[in-house]
Length: 141
Image (tube, rainbow, N blue to C red; front, side, top):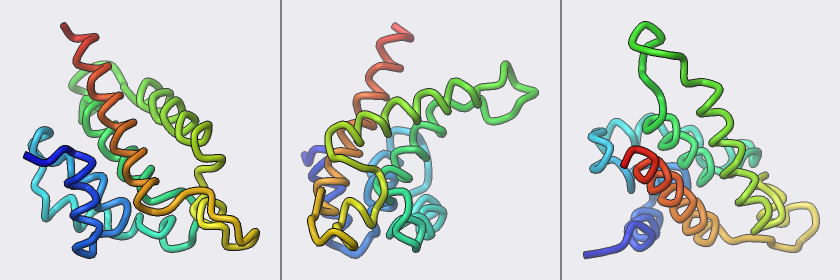
């Protein structure tokens, strides 16, 4: 059985963008159809097509939202603030490890100094997503 990290890299090698590779790796355990997630996350690759927020982090953010959100404000207390805090925490962890969360900076477009390859961004985003999901699970136990 492949690890989530191995699965994400396999998906990326198949042509999934960074956001798709991360988000689709977690579909099964969250009960999300992978084809739908592939389609939803397509526009988030290559830093939302503009080399802005790292696509791998966009995929991570989608999974954090899926796991944390109540899905409808009428179903329970609003979860937006809690979700935003979690997203900020894990994106900041990524930045601490890699020097940025902006795609063009990670790829060294202007500086010619690559801070983080796409594969490493994906691996780090998957690891941070797993860390978040494990922390949620431990909090529920």
